[in-house]
Length: 240
View 1 (cartoon, rainbow, N blue to C red):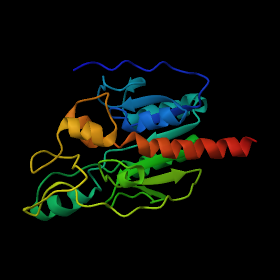
View 2 (view 1 turned 135 degrees about the vertical axis):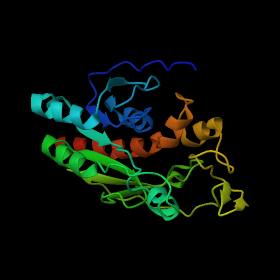
View 3 (view 1 turned 180 degrees about the vertical axis):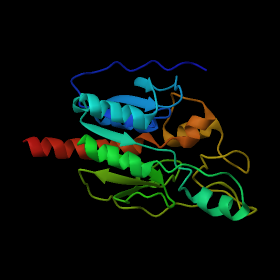
View 4 (view 1 turned 45 degrees about the horizontal axis):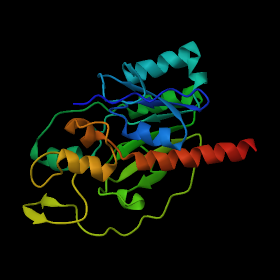
């Protein structure tokens, strides 16, 4: 694998803390919107293209709050593990007795983010995760080759919900034993017509990693570029 070239830090940009960062799908969008991004993840992420700290995200956030260093950041984004509340875990897997119990980190995460004083975004897939659906984004809103619906809870700020356009067809692959073709690829799992790594890279606009696990967990940068642009526009309007 070709290692990505880290993007130089630009201290003239507002700083964003990217918790549970994975390989940087969300981070790249915020960077394109105008943020300087720092990622935190519990496992090493050599493909992450920005400043990175390997640490437990909740412990790292708590340490920043305690030390006062949280004041160096303008906002935070968090994409905590979704297995405890995602549709697959609570639906098919639960009904068939598959899988295992997963920790739900969102209540503790939200409490820490609220105590930080930062405006924030918590991202989760559709399901029963305990987040507000302040925003609901879809790949079709940005002309992407994935649908990848995601919910976003906004803390300390708000913005308007964009229009959700009609889908152009099916997600390609097998579902309940029936194969359907369509304009979108399934960027999760393996087999059954699921997307290949190059297809996922193209469909989501993520080129700096070719690790399948990182791609299946990522959100398209277009989502957070839109969110980050909305946030910075509001901040500039308030400062004017």
